Image 1 (tube, rainbow, N blue to C red):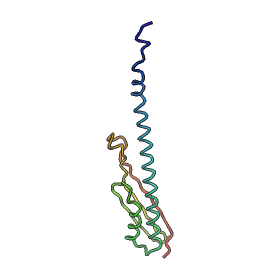
Image 2: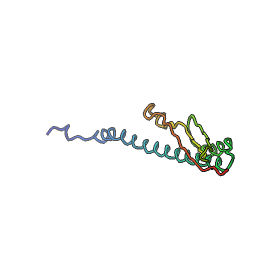
Image 3: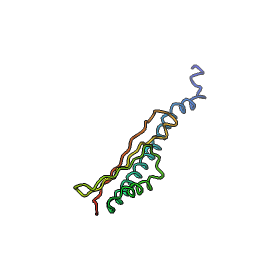
Image 4: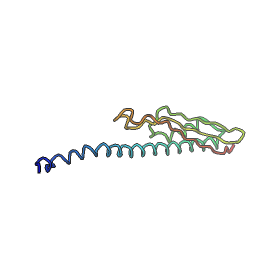
Length: 128
């Protein structure tokens, strides 16, 4: 047999080079999924808190927005907006929290995952 067929000195390096991109993609995907899940949960809580304050007040839009913003302190969203509407004929108040989520992977690989618009809405019965 030919001697260069039996040599396997660089095999581990080649296998590592083939597997590492898939591993890194999986790792960053898990990290991004966790961050966006946490962001959406925080936005849902902020919309709920803002709607609760609006439901028990006149509704006071300033207090409702402030209550929602208190919960959004640790969230990194761009273009954050909080809208409060109601009560209308149905006696319901609605709070919508929206913003744009920018993934960490954009700093590593620009354009891999673009900015993601997120929006969470909560509606409650107005108690006034």
